[in-house]
Amino acid sequence: CAAVYLGAIDAAFSALMRLSLRLVAERTNRPGSLDKYLDDPLLLFIPVRLLLGIVACAATALIARSTGVDDAHTLGVVVASGAAFVLVFHVLLPLAVAGRDPERMLDVLLPTFEPIGRVLGPMTRVIANRFVTTRRSGPAPTPDEAAEEANEAAKAYIDTAEQEGLIEGEERRLLQSIVDFGDTLVREVMTPRPDIVAIRDDATVRDLVAQFREQEYSRFPVYKESLDNIAGFIFVKDLLTLDAVDARPITGLLRPAVFVPETKRVPELLKQFQRHQTQCAIVVDEYGGTAGLVTIEDLLEEIVGEIRDEYDVESEPIADEGNGRFVFSGKVGVDEIVQRLAVEIEREGFETVGGYALSRIGRVPTVGEKFDFDGLTVEILDAERRRINKVRIAKSAAAEHANGAAQGEPGDVSVRTR
Image (tube, rainbow, N blue to C red):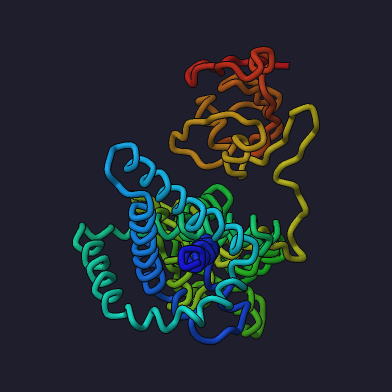
């Protein structure tokens, strides 16, 4: 009975440990012992497993005494009986008793365990302190290692919570986005340089009003001579303070710009936005040139998905045409190809589908050209002087014929025209 009692506590608490324990604690307003053990699991695990060891030894001794250990055969019987005792009373019965509703089982058993825990408290604290000291004696993890460990733990909690029915598909997507948010770099969410809509610093207020009406943005970067020399930002609301729309220069309306490196992590940028009380920044590359523009909307979209306003033109970034063919916007992440077409793509300095196609083709193609590489057939649907805007991608005939066999070598690109 003692083994089943202790084993049930151990099994029930271990089952709860597979979940995010705070979800359970916050969902159930139960006072006392459970919250204490959730805060420090060693307070429960150490005395329970210590007592289980004592019970197992006592059971083995009783079996040995009842059979009389005088030869190897009898010793083997004793060992086998002890193993069977542990299996049945420490593993199988406790799991059968506590496995279905571990939380309720702990509510029943923990009050009776409290006096035992207090008696073994001094020994538990000594062992726990020794355990913590041993863990801390090793080399301290780097910030990146600590962040990676925390992310892996969070992903495990999300997986388990979904399996246990605590969260559903959309909730899981949101939680996963929050976890991934910490690893995202600014260059992955920014508006790239070719898409920046800006205005020269020698423009007039009349020019500015015309551009606001044409582009329907709420702010513009202002540059001197080129985008690599950003002078600041102008906000459309600042026009409301003017008495008239005339030919005066726009420099009097300039607000200072915030500059951030493209390798900055998104959470750090969000904190910087809060400190500077701003909502946009210019992204610079390693050479100091303008790489792109990032806004607080870009950051929030990483968590909740695309945010559209009344001026956004509805356009699907990915369209499934059936029969394994997809139309991708050039701005879509290259991971979408990997997921939808079940192929492997080696990253070589690109993040988007357009960048991937440019990297593999080696030049800006013309509309209508088709290329075969990496086991894919890529058709150019929309391209400009320096970039690819839209492509149609499907598995190549050779890859389909091989039924998932080895794909073409990365350097092997063939060109087909209509």
